[in-house]
Structures are given as C-alpha cells and as structure tokens.
Image (cartoon, rainbow, N blue to C red; front, side):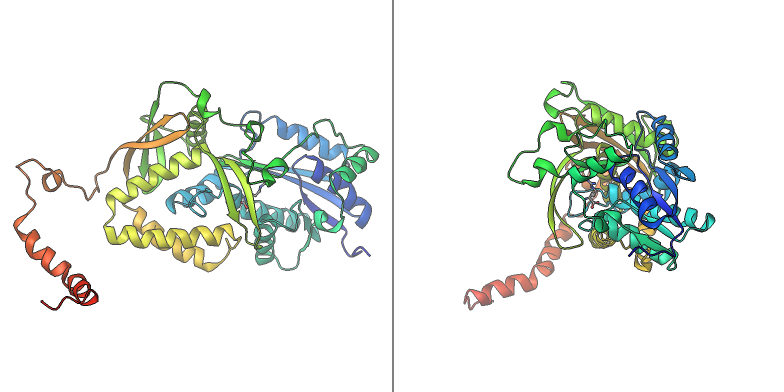
Length: 408
Ligand code: ARG
C-alpha cells in the first residue's frame, strides 16, 4: 500500500527515460502532486538550452511546478575545489566527479521540498550503487522528516517494462537506445552497464562521448599553464578567468588530446566490485597539476601525512558521508597546507597523456644553490658522512645480527 500521507513529492528530474517514468508512476501510485527539479552542474556544457526542453517535458507530463537550479558556481567553489585541494582520486584513479555532485543535488532537493511544503523527495538511484547512499545520507541529515522515495527499487521494472510503460503513458522514447548508464557534470562523465559489465572486454569506443581517441589526437603536443592561488586554480595561459570557464577551458584542451579516459575496477560502498569507465579531462589535469605544486612547496613530512589525510577525505566523500564532521576537520588541515600552494604548473597534453613538465612557486622548498651539482653548491657535503652513520645505525646493526655476523 502506498503511503497516503504523501501529497506532494519533489522529484529530481533529468528528463531521461527513468525519471520520466518515475514522474508518472509517482503521480499514479501516490496520487500526489509532483514538483520536478533539475540541477545544472554543467552537464549540458555544449547545449544549455537543453534545460528548457527538460522543463517543457516535465510540464507536459503534468508537474505542478518545475525548478532548474544553476548550481555550477557553488559546485565548483564548494565541491570541486576541495576535491582538487585533497588530490581526490578514489583508489588512486577516479576523481569523484559524480560523488561530489550528489550531496549538492540532495541539498537543493531538500531546500525545494521545504519551500514547497512537500512530504517527500524522490530520485532515480538504484538500490545497488553509491549514489543512493550519498543522496539519502545528506537528505536525512538536513531534514529527517522528509520521506525519501526510490521508485527504481520499489517498482521492479526492467528496461523493457519501462519502455512499455513510457509508451502507455505518452512519454517519448525517441532517444532510448541507451546502451550505458551515464552521469555527467562539469568535472567528468561516468559510464557503466552493458558490455562494460565484462571487465575482460576492452571498453568500446562508443562508451566515450567527450574525448577523442588518443590515437587520433593531434600529433603536436600542447602545453597549458595553470596558475594556482592557495590551492585553487585561478588562471590559464596567463588569463585570470572565472572558475567555471577555467574548468571548461581545461576540459576542452584535455578532450582535444584524449586526456582523462579511465577504466576502473571500483570497490563500491555497498560491497560490490564494479567496472566503470570515465572521461574526466579537467579533473585529471587539475589534480595532477595541483599535486605537483603542493609537493614542491611542502616538507617531506607534510607530503607524507597529507597523502593519508587526502585518502581519508576521498574515501569519506566517495562513501557518501559528505555531512560527516570529519570531512570539515580534515579540510582544516588540507586548507592549512594549501595556504602555500601558490604558483604555476605547465602541463603537456599529448595523445591521451597529461604530464607536468615545469612548475614555479614563491614558496618552493627547492633551492638551486643547494640542489645543484655544479661546484658552486652550498650544500655541506662534509656533514653527509656523519649523517649517514647515524641515519643507518639501527639498520646496519639489525642486518648484521640477522645474518649472524659477530663483528660490530
Ligand atoms: N561509480 C561512480 C561513483 O560511484 C559513478 C556512479 C554513477 N555512474 C553512472 N554510470 N550512472 O561515483
């Protein structure tokens, strides 16, 4: 029996087949009014007018109100920049592009639900993935009174049933030849399902939509110069531009050169291993550049401890615990370290690779006078002898004892 106390539902609506069926299904099952909400996280970079079509589609399917929220600025400032400062690569590979979008979408779904006096929010996540965890943990933290509906779990329809249901309910199925399940925003594109579920098969070219195949990328490399201020990218090739444009520019440069294609066997929060492919040109370039600059200005002790903190931050965010106070506590450390991550990095893009090829910072702990192999070096090589003696003391003793050597 459907919960008949639910009179109004905010549906997170993408305009695709799943959420369109959901819209009708929720109306029928709960007899409730539906308010639809589409978050603009930069997924329609190439054609922002698509949001108008999504809105129209929602009204055609009978929503009482539709919201398109442009969240790009907040997404970049409060979610993507912290990911860059944390060098956030889950299991060393995946730059959290989908993961950081979810708590932001949930935040606005709750906000709209409160504003519209809705009883529930609904989303199109399945019961197998990470996204349900990210959405629900955030929403429940922000407003425990709101019910969360997950039609994908409740209705038990497969793809074919959905297409049938759509036809019966006047939902257009024109672009439903979807081989894959995808998620896109300004920081990356995730792709799974279909043939990708077979990790022993090479991902086909049609799993990619943003980047050129590395083999077809230009024969000439391109060097881009990225400037950072306190760990945040602020300028590219000498021009200071707003954060959204900066990410888009880095994205386009990377995409041209086939950079940021990832193929990852991933450990999901719910325990499954899954194979996902990604295209994250901007994320990969910016994280690589940031990490290089950070290493340049930090002591080796800071560097080694930072990687532990980064990994903890990344896992927490991947696992959907954005709201956990530990995240902000870790960020206090991350931000302190990033106070000195100012300077520039040059990255060479070439046939699918992004390599850091030069860097400079007023806070660099590098000193040419000390490091040079030239004879003008000021490094005290005489004291190295004593240093080595003490540095290796226990290791030498341990070795000789282990191998039964009696002499001291
Ligand atoms: N595995 C990624 C994550 O958990 C992406 C999930 C969404 N992917 C998708 N193809 N719909 O963050």
